[in-house]
Length: 102
Picture 1 (tube, one colour):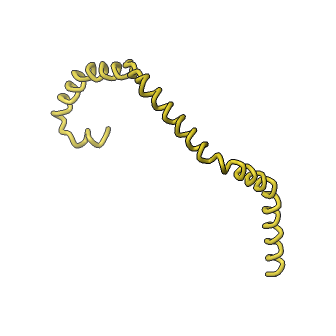
Picture 2: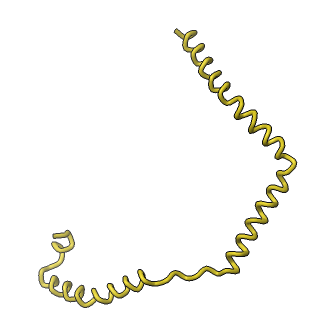
Picture 3: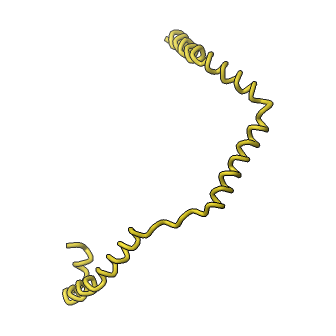
């Protein structure tokens, strides 16, 4: 028994069950209608224009970054080549600090 059933006097219990029985088919029909409804088809022109605009933005960004692409590639190579040395350097530095502290 739920909290609501304790709050409702017993004379209203029968009324509540009759109302629920009357509205159950309507609610079931609405639920079936929502589940079987086909989603609206997307607007082809809007989707095409959206893809075109995004493509133009990507091209514009690459065109602006074109003078810096060589430097970005060199920086990426240096980072990849020295990442292990840097992390190893941190470990050596931490060991040196720990030995000095003790």
